[in-house]
Image (cartoon, rainbow, N blue to C red; front, side, top):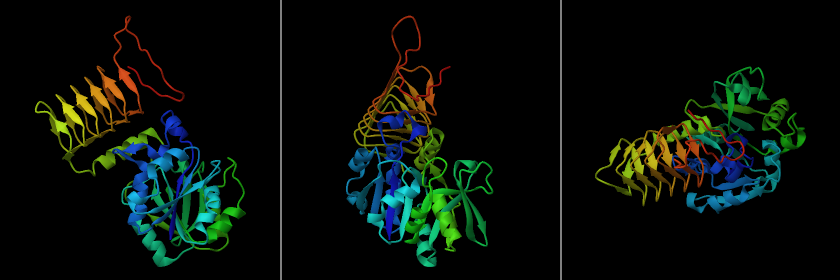
Amino acid sequence: MKALVLCGGSGTRLRPITHTMAKQLVPIANKPVLFYGLEAIKAAGVEDVGIVVGETAKEIIQAVGDGSKWGINVTYVQQDEPLGLAHAVMVAEPFLGDDDFVMYLGDNLIKEGITSLVEQFRQNRPNSQILLASVKEPERFGVAELASGKVVKLVEKPENPASDLALVGVYMFDGHIMEAVKAIKPSGRGELEITDAIQWLIDQGLVVDPHIIEGWWKDTGRLEDMLEANRIMLDTLEARNEGYVCSESNVVGMVVVEKGAEIVNSTVRGPAIIGEGTKIVNSFIGPFTSIYYGVEITGSEIEHSIILENSTVTDISGRIEDSLIGQNVIVERSPLKPAAYRLMLGDNSRIGIL
């Protein structure tokens, strides 16, 4: 069995962060989202992994390499345009051949992993098996209808969903899927939809089984989902200190202080993680906060947020919360008069000011 991990797409819902980095590499609890998926694939016993890449191919390849750090073998598949999930399967045919495979969307996070899904597929041998979960906004997803324990209909982002069972973004296929992706036509949005390909399998009388998960999962394509994913994953960590915490500082609860990090005259209340080489001075870091490597925070308060690498936050009087601050960002109090907000924001930025 093989795995196909999809890392194309431009991440428009996370702009401007994704103007400069792949959405699959945005860190959750200081680990890129993609890495959780690769760990889950390896844990399920799958070691031959194809990664479909697009315009962010260079970043993905640099981060993942040959896969040896996870004990997997990685082959990269170029998708020149993001023309749909079924199109990604089609361009990966030289890698996949006729083999069974699990397809995993690289920006998904499934806390319990995919081992039970893969084991059920191996045991029951359907032509396809799809991971489903009950969601509050099914119109945002592909939606499944079931009858007698089988999937009978799939609709991509329906205006009036017939159920609340959404496709989570992990699929199992045998070799019939290649015939399906070649048989379907582009949807109204110009993409070859994987839901249409699975529906083709159903219409041909082939077996598509559901696998409904009760545990937690997230499509991390939106800020609010990424912050929730960060909160959940921070809760799974175990406290450790590999850096320096001065005697005047107060570290409370589940806090990870990574190598070379310094906490000086500050309070950090977990769950939280402070990345390598980061320095926290005269500050408060509240629960559910991930601070990546090389960050400097001085005289400020941050809570329920993600701060990416090499950024600086200095002397901010109010508390920063529910925020995602990108790479190499400077947030500081200005000494200039008259007092005013002075902003330099990229395209698609979003900022809230009292």
